[in-house]
Amino acid sequence: MKFVEVDLFGVYVAPISLLLIAAWLVVIVLQRAAARFHLLDLVWHPALFVCSVYMIVLSSIVLAIAG
Image (cartoon, rainbow, N blue to C red; front, side, top):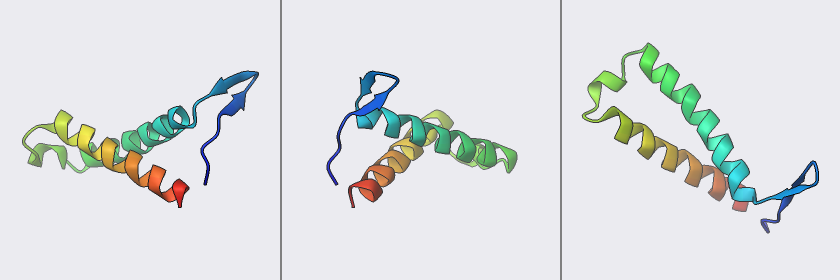
């Protein structure tokens, strides 16, 4: 798949910015689920763990779309 600019109300947006937002929303849901079950208490550095999960989700989305 070729990544091309997306036209949002006359403004061209890079496709990675939309993927960044999508990954951010997925990570928010995962973070709230982990906080509900106290899973973030089990990791050494919760902020670093969430950042790592964000990178994993973002790369997974990019790879899934790129096919």
